[in-house]
Amino acid sequence: MKRHSLKIQMAVIFIIIMASTLLIGWVINNVFLEDYYILKKQDDLVGTYTQLNRAASENNFTSPESLGLLKVRLQKGNISMYVVTPNGGALKYCPNEEESTLRDQLYDYITDPNFTMDGKEPYEVHKFIDPDSKTEYVEMWGMLDRGDVFLLRSPVSSIQESVLISNRFMAYIGLVIIVVSALIIWLISRRITEPILELAQISERMTKLDFDAKYHRVCKNEIDILGHHMNQMSETLEHTISKLKTANNELQKDIQEKIQIDEMRKEFLSNVSHELKTPIALIQGYAEGLKECINDDEQSRDFYCEVIMDEASKMNLMVKNLLSLNQLEFGNDKVQMERFDMTSLIRNILMSTDILIRQNGIKVIFKEEEPVYVWADEFKVEEVFTNYLSNAIHHAANEKIIEIRMIPMDKNVRISVFNTGIPIPSEDIEHVWDKFYKVDKARTREYGGSGIGLSIVKAIMESFHKECGVQNYENGVEFWFDLDKGL
Image (cartoon, rainbow, N blue to C red; front, top):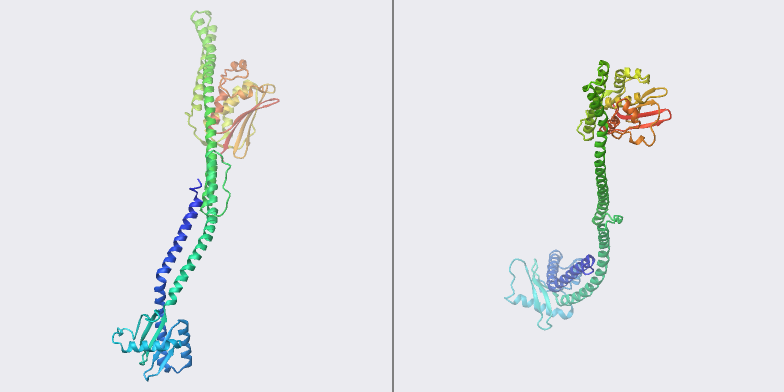
């Protein structure tokens, strides 16, 4: 791991690049510096010639100011000068020991037919090696505009020594720079790779499903962006795994529910068989009695027929209710949402059941007069309310009062049906919504109930995605359901 560390690789790469750059600089300095120096010397000589020519043309070398500026340039460029004027005089700037050498060299150029200018410029620039001292010079000789002949010379030997010293100095400085830079690069690479190493550790912890590991650095660079994205990925993975675990638990629950459904199916078949057994037995018994003419009088035969018809009607109603409940539970019954007046619906149902209410001596209290609009399936809401009202009529006792209320809530309207009588036992109250469950079997049998009505109510309200419930009071029972306001 260490050998392949990004920190080491970065440091090595940067050090190699830096060392290579210094080496290339040293080679360039060693190979081209002298030529560059000579080129600059030639430029200095040309500049000196220009100033010399101007001084000669303007003041015939009589201005101290012009001569002073010329001397400064000659000193600065380490240039020796010898000028022969048209009248045979001489203007010289050189060490005493070089004066005769420069004079002789200039006369040699003038008198030697091999030294000729090419005609482009009134001067010639070339290298010259003194045969006695073996010293190399850059020389310029030629003629000024007014006819003066001049010779400018600058030694090259100093540059060769300078190149050597420069290369040696560059080598020493390069070593120091490499050492110092290596240390700086190491620190910088460490600073860069530490967040990456932290991210690697976080990712390793994430592979072990440890999502508490988070990246906390804040430098606002690309590594930090990656770190914050890893934090988001960690949270997303944690949330996804949580959902998967939840789904797994739900799957386990579904399996348990399937087992329960199988048990309920068996129980349902048993309950249906039990519910049908009694009316079938009655129908069979009374039909056999009619066939065998047990009672010959017309009144007895009518009674037998009424019993058979009543039991058949109960069986038909139970089958219809079972089919309706089956469609609701399996989502085959479509819900048609519409806006309607709940007050009007309740009053219509009360009118249609008025005879049954008066027969049982019940007082109904419903004070709502203004329209109350709701959103729901009107036909199914009628079935829900009719079930509640029917139960209230059959179980009303004591004062025999039924009170119907509509309570406005935040987004819903709660419709409740209360009847005085005996409260539902606490052990039975959570089972009243189960199919075929009867709190008082004898009383339910008496008015022809099958124990399916409240199951249908529960299924209808679930299809609306709304709540329904039951609440006991000291003097009776209240059933309620919620609907969306139809503002």
